[in-house]
Length: 140
Image: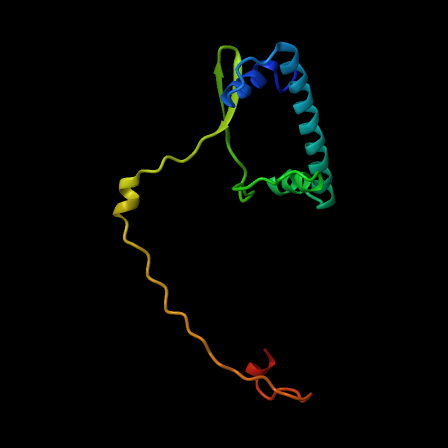
């Protein structure tokens, strides 16, 4: 059994507005998607091994996508590992990351953060010639 079935491809096609996708086209697309993902994961594993790590990170996947000239992932970071949950429905398994539920009332009732201080500028003139600056500010 493959990771991407033709039913998955048909569902994605329907969500994009393509309703009459043929069975053989969906099967060919599912094989192609699985092959491409396999390539990206292999490339990401190379980044992981060269970094001397044993855990694959989102940065490894992003680097692998960049090497393949594919747009990298946006909005994902590898700060801590994700906890996947499993849902079973009609003999299909689905793994998902449970998002934290945010209550807007509690957010709106919190006090506002402090306003940052005004921006200040300091004027400084550089030294002409080749003499070494005498004070620390001049060496900037």
